[in-house]
Image 1 (cartoon, one colour):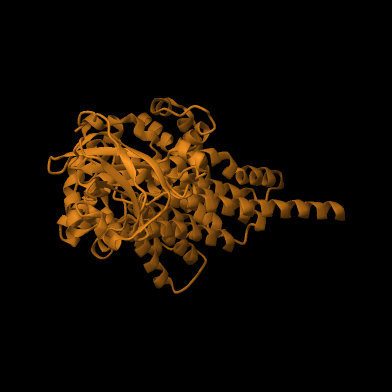
Image 2 (tube, rainbow, N blue to C red):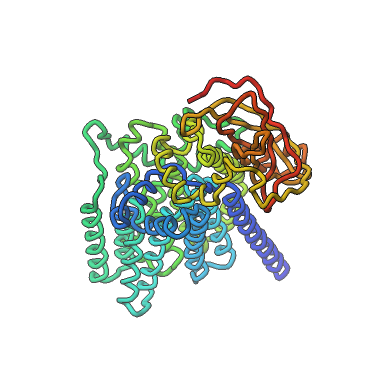
Length: 590
């Protein structure tokens, strides 16, 4: 018997070490993939939001609802960034990443403070938290700095409110200080994004289930009502369902279940050798079936607590239940608030961006299940084994999403390159946002030297190359091939050429940027690395996701003039040049 016990202890210790290694490995891969694939320039809705911030007094921009969302606190962040840090998207990405890490820390603190489960269960719970927070399946939000600031502020605010309420349930003092923290955190969540209003019904459900005093429940209800009234009186449109967009209860439930079950669809599809088409994603029953299962499990977890009102013995159970209920309610808000959009675009129900919320819903359910089965020997190890396999089960999806994030990063860099060069490559810019909005705000960006204009690369165009870096040249063994792809136009209507190709220095490194000069040495444009060229990466043994392909433009292009390329970085120009291959340009695409 002693030997059997010792053997069991050894097996459990090995399992613990393996689970810890998996958690650390997944965490490292998630942060590395995010860093490698995050967007470094203004993208998507942020063009509109920054237009508001730059053309209105701060208080008006902060108080205005956008898309039925009040984003007061995120607006504070990017208003400070615009005013003091030149609209640095890297800074917002770091802030968003810090908030994401903070939300994971709150969950981990609650896990490791729990006294009802052992070390093995806590390590498995840690793995669940890491996978849910740092999976690249959430990259449509987490890889874009401002978006991550918005959504992670909601999560951090909500978790802070839930954790503080758990302290109150445990009898912590002083009561009023903790209650102020609860409602303040709830307000931060509510006025960071529309989903944050799910914090109030969640707090009430938690408070009721934990038998908190009527004074506490009444205070939470009162502040929640004040928050809703404040939201209503803020300027901007509130959600509205017109008669033509009204849906039946069955349709609403199907959409709701699809939103909940989407993570399983993409996780399963990642194991297939065929790419998941939008039509296949929309017609698949996997999200509905898994979402229905999730809804049933959530009801099974919440209803007994509401009836018996016995929540509070386990801090992990408290936070896990809060996480489940909060994201459950948030998904309901999405179904209601996005009804018109889902009518116009039925594929919206399986949109990747909603996995930011649904992944947390499932994490909450898994943590509840983990805490419940910890004392049941027959279910303990099967549960531990299945949950510890999560990183392996979703790794194909994790990796493919990382590749997608890198692709989006390079698409945004391509559009930014056209803006820096002052040309109108509408096809590239349209992938950023509406071209008219982008071009209008880009003029202000250029004048104020914001975002992609902060480094002053645009000032190089039109000057002699000898004026750059004090005329310092250095041999870097520049190799590559650059060719004219087709014609576009400058912002002033003059002809311009879009050029593409590849370049490498010393057969080991990729230049940060290239300058394009005419025979007289005048800088006519810039090129930047914006494409992954697998053949070049393989030939020169570069990293798989390295951007060895370049995109650039030649302003005032003349097909009869020879143009050359030099690399420009580290306070020097390359001694070597590459000649731009001239061919008969295609007609302008604008």
